[in-house]
Image 1: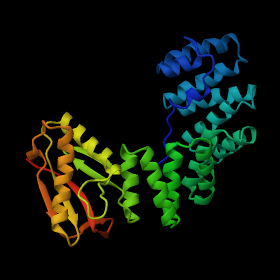
Image 2: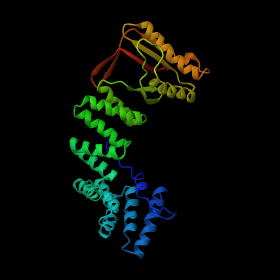
Image 3: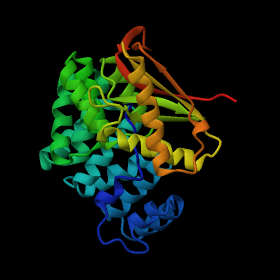
Image 4: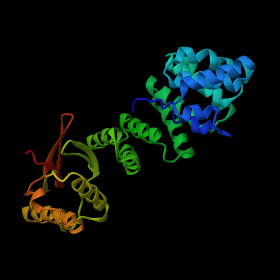
Length: 317
């Protein structure tokens, strides 16, 4: 995962006593220029006001003006050198200015004062990852996950590192954990591709009309045609898309190596399950195909054979 800085999200961790014209108010409402004006006026009245200097720096950061932000963040630290929030944002500021050694030093200083500071652990891990220090980054991502079990950046990058380290079984487990919590969006699609490249197709990416979608694969108990419990959520998502887009039509294609009849029954079973909850859907919107052979899937020059699978292919009008 490429490091991304969501400047508007982290402020909620630092907000205390939020009132109409407090520092977080201007961040919440994206009134950055108004905030700069208001807190500069406070600084003129009280040049020793560290909080006002800090928030002016934050507003400039939100405006993607790190050079303008730096003197204000530095001023806040000169007044309150041990404030972990000020130190952390000085690190973010250094990152934006591409002063990476100073960035890392800031995060390390935060961790000296507060070892469990989630954002400092996370951003220092990002920095190590960008340097190619996989082991150091992994240790910190593990720590973040202990502190924040569902942290998406830590879960994603930890899985990616395991794959890059050649730890296949651990990487597969880590990708499944990430995709269980975060099955939507571009990162889910990327994670699914990485999972598939490891030979695991528990999750797959599909195209329905103009929409790219990550779904848990449709699976069955041995020799049966009714999809198992884990597959139901995917079929409900597909049904919801059909309900939203009445023009959506797609082939349901089943593969079972050596058993075309079972493949046919499974394709029909998938369609019947979708129709059971939506009797108004026309079966013709989901034409069936089946094969008594394995599905061959190509990923980055590799070919994988899936002895049993369900594929969805949009009907092109």
